[in-house]
Image 1 (cartoon, rainbow, N blue to C red):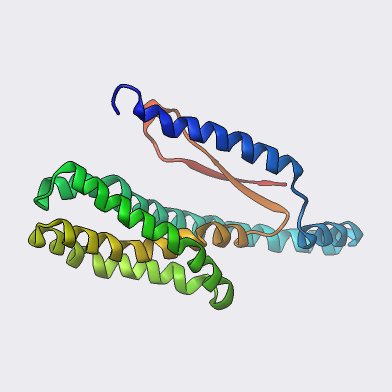
Image 2 (cartoon, rainbow, N blue to C red):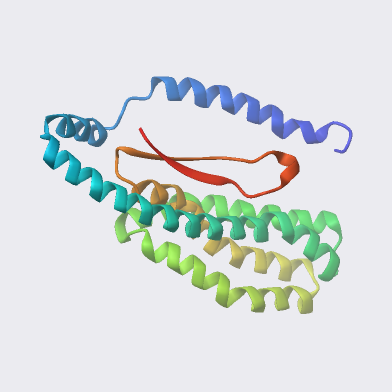
Length: 209
């Protein structure tokens, strides 16, 4: 794995990048966006100016909400994927291989729940899933980490990872749609990382489409 195996995911990633580029160049705009574009072009200048002011105010609110959602999303990913194998192999009495398998099981469960969370959020709204994920991590983090430390077995680690997968799926399954819906159709949000050596967080900026 250290000699060459770590390159395999990057090879798959390169293949997926080509697929995404191919699909993106051929995807059509949604009817909602096309209709909105035609509506704005037919508005007079005064109405369009008032609409732009409301859009600007909404974008500022959406910007700060996006920071909060992204922070929650980053924490869930860090806890369940990055940190858990190290923590469990060091404090749960299991070896590194078992710790990695427990993490894989938890991640697999979360991935399975992603589309379910997205489907349910279409019906019940995004807010319950975002707030529920945040509350679950505040309430469950200490008990689940105590369970891992005191249980000291592979089974307890898997149970804890499975329970962590629920709020993880709640935020990851609806996060992208939520951030997109925070901005008007004529706004687009994007981010760019700083230089790797600085290790500073990403900056988020907004721009007219």
